[in-house]
Image (cartoon, rainbow, N blue to C red; front, side, top):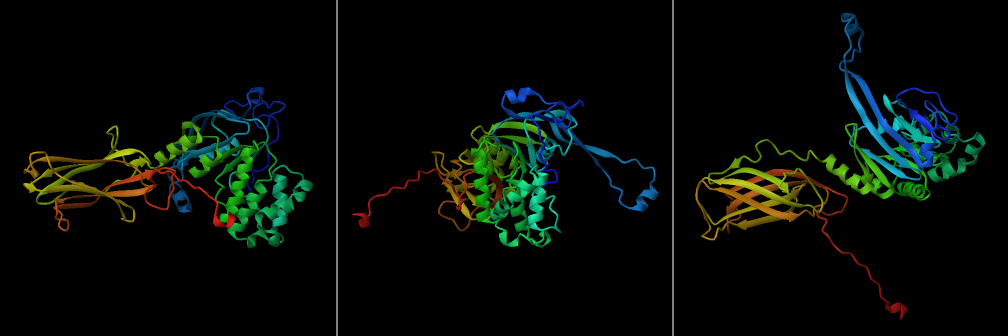
Length: 443
C-alpha cells in the first residue's frame, strides 16, 4: 500500500498549479476549489500540465573523483516527461492511461496524486482521492498482517475502529485467514500483493488512482480481482488505471488516453486507443539483417522485398484483418525457362503458415530473357495471430522443387498486432454457433 494512500478529503482540490494561490475553503494543497468541475460532473480536470526532470549526464560517486575535480560543474540534460497535457474525466468513469515505457504515464498519475508537483498547469480533483502507485509500499515487514491492515486502513482515511471492523473481510478476500498473525517478512511475494490488493479495495474515496496492479496472485485470485473491477465499473466509482494490458483497457475502461514521449496523442474510445497503442508499440517492427534482400544466384538476383498496405506505403507492422501485399523485385542474369516464384510466411518458430507461388507466363511463353526486371507480388487479407513473422523467398523452375534457383530465408520480417488472441497461428474470420435439441433422456 502506498505511503501516499491517505485520501485527500475535500470537495474539490487543486493538485498542481502554475501560480501558487491561497487554498479555498474546500481545497486541499495549493489552489482553491471551483464549482465548475462539479457543475459539469467532472471528477478530474487536467489543464496544460508540464513536467521536466533534470538528469545528471555524469555521476560523481567516489571521493577520489570529487577531490580530483573539486570545482567541476555538474551538467544536466532535460527530460520532458509531460508536455502540455489536458483532459477531463467524468464522475463514475473508468478511465485508462496507456503508453510505452517512458511515455509519462506514472509521472502523470503521481502528479494527480500530489506525489510530484507539476512545473506548469493545473489538476483539480472533485472529491477525496486514494492513490495506489505500487501495491505493498508502506507495509511494515516486522508487523503482522492484522497490524498492517489496520495501519494501512487508517492511512487510507478510515478510523481505527472501522479499519478493525473490516479486518476479517480483508483477510478473507486475500485468503490469508490462517496467516493473520504471521509477520509480513515471512510472507511470499504472492501473499503480499494479495493482502495489499485486498486492503486497496476497502478505500472509501471518490477517486481511485491505480498503477499496474491487475496481475495479482494466481489465476483464481486474478478472477476475483477482475470481479472487483467490474463491480467498480458498474457501481459508478471514478477509477484511473495506468496499465500495459490492452485487454484490461478494453474490458473495463469507458475511455482512455494514449501518451507518447510525454505528449497526449489520442483520447477517446478505449478500443480505439488500445488499437493505436498496439500499432505504436510495434511501429519499429522488425529490421531484417543488412543485405538480407541482396541475394543472387548465377541465374537470378533478388533486388528488394517488402510489405505494403493497400495505399502502397511500406509496412513493418500489420493490423489483424488488414489487406497487405508482399512484393519482390528481381533481375534475371541468365535466360530462365519454366520460371516459378513464391513466398513462404513463417512464424517466429519457423513454422510455415502460408505458401504463395505461381509460374511465370506473359501470354507469349514461359521463358524469361536475361537482363529482365521482374516484379512479383501477392495480396492477402491478414488473418495471422498477433506475433512476429518472417517471409522466405524462392525462385525456381516448375516441377523442380528440390533444387531452387534462388532461396532467401528471412528476407523480410514483420509484426502483427491486434486483440484477437488464439492458440493457433491464424485467426480467420468465422461465425461460431451452438444449438441444442431435446435429447433421448428427455423424451
